[in-house]
Every structure is written in C-alpha cells, then in structure tokens.
Length: 76
Image 1 (spheres, rainbow, N blue to C red):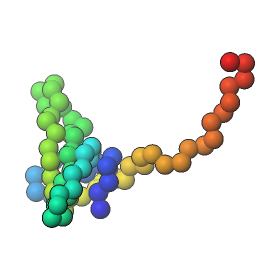
Image 2: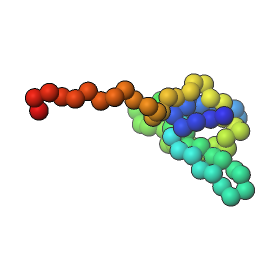
Image 3: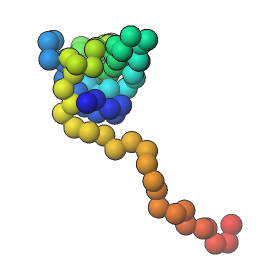
C-alpha cells in the first residue's frame, strides 16, 4: 500500500520519487503522482502518474498526526 509522502519506485520504468498526489476513480482505479527527487541537466524532472499496483513503497512517510501540547510563551 502506498501513502502520500512515501518514497516509491515504478516497477516497470524504474522511475523513483515521492508520492505527492492521489486520485481515486469511480471504478476503483487509484493513481499516484510521483515527483522525482533528482534533476536532469540541471532542471527538475516532470512529475509522472502511475497506477498504485505498479508502485513499490521504499519508505513510509509520517505525515500529520498528533503533536505535543503547545508551549505558552510568557511575556508576549
């Protein structure tokens, strides 16, 4: 299973990057937008879209979630 923020690799092309977008279609197709972390000739590589089943998650991102209670600033 792929989550937004995961580092992923496409099993067919070998394209690697971070899953930055997700679409879910009416008949069950789930696709992810993957942004490359590398550059080519000094320019960013264009984002690519892949079906979820083609992607393998290399690492799971921890996005959002609970945070510690905020610290109150004294004297402000």
